[in-house]
Length: 381
Ligand SMILES: [Zn+2]
Image (cartoon, rainbow, N blue to C red; front, side):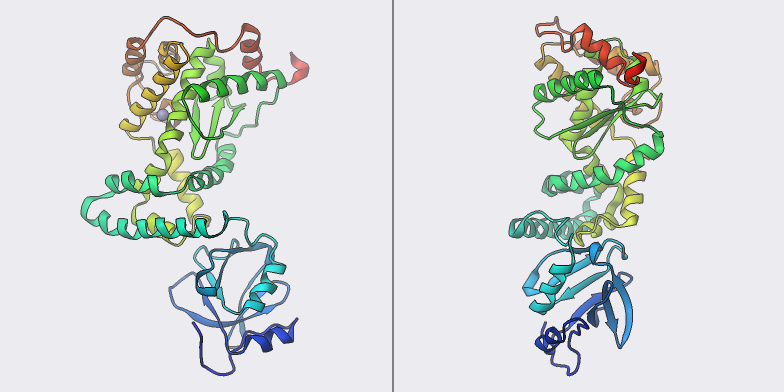
């Protein structure tokens, strides 16, 4: 990437020596609207100023700078406040050092070192290959093959993006009653262990009166108080939670995102860019407006049945709870109540898998009562 054109050194106002040391090395800037390479200079002002032909074309706040990778001695940067695909490549080591000093969150989005870079390269390659495969075979197969190659950190990232939207959509707040939370944690952890799900979970009860529960990718499960109030036993809720854990374990969100997002989503993956505003909009739309495939729902139900059997408890109560809420007609909505398969069929399946209890009660009566009142302020109990 060495350039021989004269008089185009990296310039630093604050450190003339850096400019001198930089010699004729340049920075390359992609403005995020096209793939054209702009040869630019950088200057350390209030932010990192990007200068092309003497004019400042962008100024990236130091706190927004993120390193992407370190290919061939270059420091590749993006800014979380710039266009999602805007990139800056800096070649001079002393300029790189100055950037590292000023940009406090440079490494924030990254895992550690080479292993991470190698993984990114691996699934970028997978994405390239997939784009061609899409044309030939279509998205479902690609989603199936590609999902296992994508690191789990991607799922957590998706989940974090969708998390804020959950609060907006449901207008809910977290239920914080201490005894209720203790009971809920016990319930979740018991089910998680029985299902052999090796992902740390974050679960919360929200105040919403909507009777529903749903998972976000990476390990978040929300139970809405409306569903909690309809539940008549810990076994009913355990089955529902196990079903949501099934979606997390099977990574249904990620598979669905690839399937729905198609080629443009894969290109986003390729650029390592899943933080842009378009991605947020896309993620939210996909997670909330589209239900899983029938197969994904059936697999999650199978996962739940196995977990309940593992606990020595019957999955039948889960079917009763779903039926109590929706009746014979599954309502077309997100989460546990997604329209496929019909709740009547699901109840039949759960009943078919009914077995006499061989395991202990998941929650004591006192714990169950505490859970039921988790959304009440402490003073009201
Ligand atoms: Zn489901």
